Length: 224
Image (tube, rainbow, N blue to C red; front, top):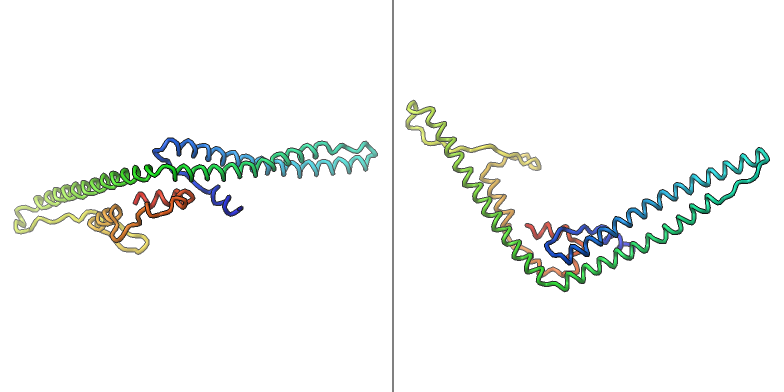
């Protein structure tokens, strides 16, 4: 049970275009904030209790030393009562969060049309990104053609036989492998990022119960 709760407390909900999910997700985040505040308050009270006990011990020692009246332990008991109330609130909030995640799971399962809508949006975004990469490649080719032409004209007619050079442009460095990467390779990598070679996992084949606890990872994979 504890492992299940810990996992659900770590769920980070992505932004979605679905109002019902957003509303319930906002409540989930609010409860997580309440839980964090309750745990912080509990820690503060435990430190206050330790200080109150030290103060009581010191006051009693002074009373014994001077023959004075022994001080009341009321301050210690008040803090202990607050700790008891705070301690009871933590498991209540934990259970509320767990049930909210159950509601989110049920909500996702009750709206299969959301998956179809996201399929449509993903494909539209992929097409737009594919077009942008193509526009970048074309714009870069036009730029380096003009830059090369300018360089060639500066030597004309001293070397009229010189063919129009092809501008190589800047080169990037792959820090992981220590290798240099040209623009052609960069563009190819960008295209493969949008349309990876090989078989893609169909999100519809993944059990919906498994989607929510891994919301961030699933959203990242879907974006690819």
